[in-house]
Length: 83
Image: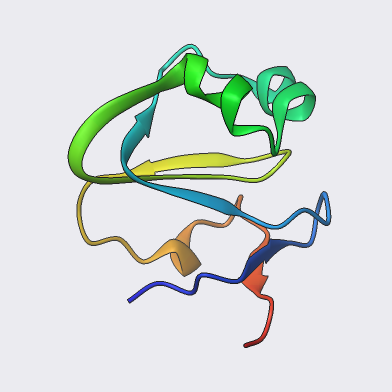
């Protein structure tokens, strides 16, 4: 299960998630900084991948295609935004 209300404490943006997509490897900080949260602009670097999920805020992003504990990633500053 995944929290669908994640929020980044570093950039104070809500974390967006996209089912069945991963991020292109050419993604960088400036891409997300300039394009979040506009889906039409983000699609330029999204790759369709069944069963995967792409996450992003304005300063961090991850592509997940297997069960992963995001809490172990020390670089992420994502917390539950409460339900």
